[in-house]
Image 1 (tube, one colour):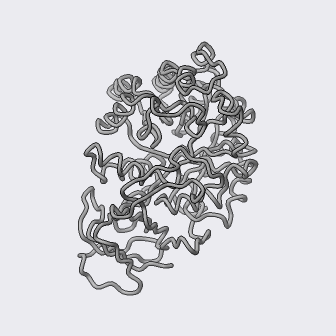
Image 2: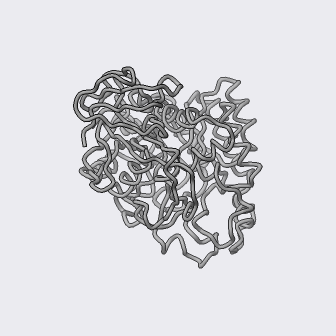
Image 3: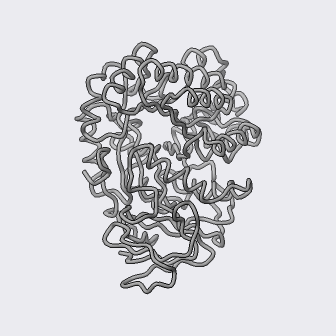
Length: 448
């Protein structure tokens, strides 16, 4: 349904919630008027209990198509995104087959996505051993940067970079001022950690210690110092690395950092043993660590929050009958992340405007989408409506994710996203339309 205006008592404009009528022309914001300004055409009237924020820009999503479409796919992932307030996704180069590591593989991705997008979607490239010569062509073709691992990725088609290979790739990315995004766990530290078969979540955390993150982050920062490259630390779980990152920022290194809703919502000591829906790498750590991550956001050391939505089939997730060393690692939370964190932030006295900035404006800025993540004239008409009066009980079987497995299953929250608008189109839960979204390229953020 095409929307011509949105009228609400609380619209996030320039960092504050104000009464406004936001006029829309086609797929862009045409004007911002007083609340009681008369609107032409269809006006979406928002309840007084609700807040209008920019659509969430989720820059860390594993859509897995083509190749592992039984795990997830463009159709299901973008629908889940739209129903949860995320209007822009950037897809990771794995766990699809083939991974997005050269131009031919990127073209396969783009063809697979055609006609399946409910929200705007762009693509990361991948840096793996032997593909240094592919990085600049991928950048010129519009990927938003390059993901690499410093330890086993879990899939054989996306191997990690050793220290020499990482530095080689980083020098190449620095040469054309690209962006390297890194899964920061160190292979040598992980190899030395105890990793015996166990259903115990405590044992799983011991197998992925803080030191693995700290060592890998140190390697990334040393590489940035040597090459001048822009680097981004993915899914930070260990708050023990915050001081190192803060010192690097003070030094002038070009480093940005993200964390995820599951690290900000759960704590290791409350996770039942034999519960693979909570398994992710790096792991969810203890409650004190969780609070330190929230403080890292407040202090500006952590820049943004992303879902790291990484689903799998029940067969993969339940492999090993509760042995957490065998189960696939990844938390499915794309559809619920903003609603969950809105309540978690409220409990801590953190403003919804700050949460929106971490999940929309800052993520858009990270990838250079200057028409996303903000409500201003000329920006794309992407919105999420969050209603504090709409109670939310999460049921994994009712989420749009392809596989009904989620760490959030059964939890209740006092508020949820009730409506999304994608390029001026109001998402209707009863008649979802997979033509709203467009494919994005890095150079301009317009459709490819």
